[in-house]
Every structure is written in structure tokens, then in C-alpha cells.
Image 1: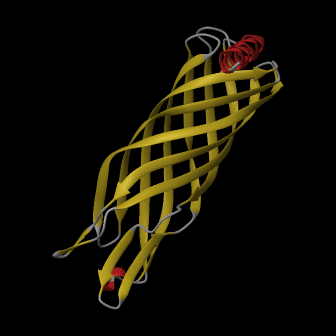
Image 2: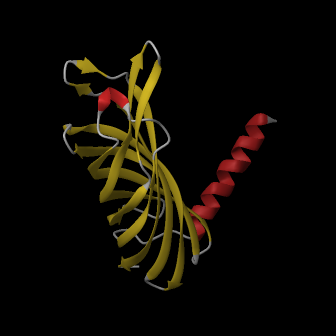
Length: 201
């Protein structure tokens, strides 16, 4: 029974994808704006009196994406994003508010689903090269993981409104003077909306 249900589910996904597939070689270009929402503290100092924390604040995010569709169901996507944030808290006797600038360059695989030529859903995953620059603390850079999902609503043949939610996943650890903060799993959520222009659709 479970095998039959699995086969039925996969068949439905295949039919949905075929009913709303982009053309092979289609290129989507999208400028976007959005909302950056950290879900964990960026710095935690363990003291005898308890943990002292500093956290990145919620902030605006803006950037752009370009998607190359390899076929109707799979595409390659590149994105660049900038987030001007603030670090606030009391860890390591830092000033209560420090300006911060986050840059992300992301490469992902994107999967397309139906249900129609007007409304399409997608899921994606990949890696992002990031650079985080903090006032007084300096810079941190590296590679993190990205997963996400979203939808595209076509208002004309080649123009769509696109909505996405993505999770930027990393571990945060800071060296402050001769002290080091605890390693913390970061799940930074990015909510974005933009206008997608499709070339070759």
C-alpha cells in the first residue's frame, strides 16, 4: 500500500511539473526586496552570573536573482543580497549597538512545480558565500547552507510576481579580544518579494 501511495504521489508531482514547466533555456531575472529575521543570538558570553547575549536585529534585505532553466522542472539560480543590520546586546562589554553589513552570494538548484501556467511553486537549496562586517569587531566570512521555497504568479506571459522564504544556515563563533564566544547554530530567515522578468518563455 505504501508503495502504491508513493507512486501515486510522485505521478501527481510529475503531472503538475509538466503542466507548468518553463522552457528549456529560459532565463528569469528578478530584483527583490525583503525582510531579514535572525532566530538566534549572534554572540553569547558565558559568565558566572549567567549568559550575556548580543543579537543581530531584523532588517531590510535587497538584491537580485538570475535563474537558468535547464528543463521544465530543474534550474540553476544565482543570487546576490545585501542586508544592513545592527548588533545589539551586552556580551563582552561591547557597545549596546554596533552597525553591521551582511553580503551574500548564493548558488542554488531550483525545482519547479505546478499547478498551472499562471501559478508556479518552487523549492531550492544550495550554498552561499557570505561576508559579515561589524563595527569594531571586524569581518567574518565563509560558506553556509541555504534552503527555501516560494511561488511565482504570472501577471503576463513574461512577467511574474515572486515570493520566497529562505533559511540561511550557519554556525556563529566570535573572538572578542582574548575571549571566544560559544558556537551557535544560526537560522537566519529571509522573506522576499520581487518582479521576475522571463526571457525566452
